[in-house]
Image 1 (cartoon, rainbow, N blue to C red):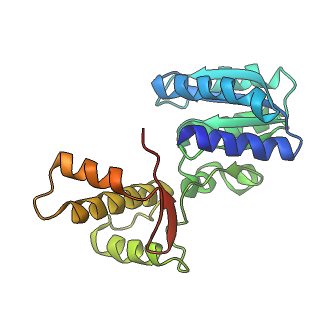
Image 2: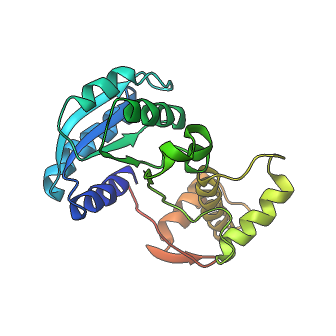
Length: 212
């Protein structure tokens, strides 16, 4: 969940003495949710929100946010927004003399960032990764994903972490459909998911379900 991801990022920041954190999100509902979670969790995890900035959602209009953040003392910037906004922020932040650590949430496509911002700007970016790398041959689930992607995926486009996350979610749903029987409908699938163990393994990947 978003809350779990923010917790892990804040814990990592605190243990590396990056305790003054600036936050950038889009100005949509997702951004509001992330901001609310960050404000609630920061004091519990030993970090302080030095600056909270939002930009026009679904765009890369981040110049004002860069200017606002570099004016306040901070150790790290958590970028909880889209890939283009993260890439443009990284470039402008470096040009403005920003020295904080840049931590990118999984809302950005990590596999595309280096190509967009270039190797110099990408060096030092920390990217939160919630799922295995799509080309990890050691994990059976990723080998299965690779086979399926070669057969059904778009030609000429490398698989991304977002695709991996969607594949895992689809596999969990298929497992629920199979347990629900041949005539599985909405209530049957819901019941199958509710009856699934809290922790289980999917083709070698440990998973846990949260029931909300």
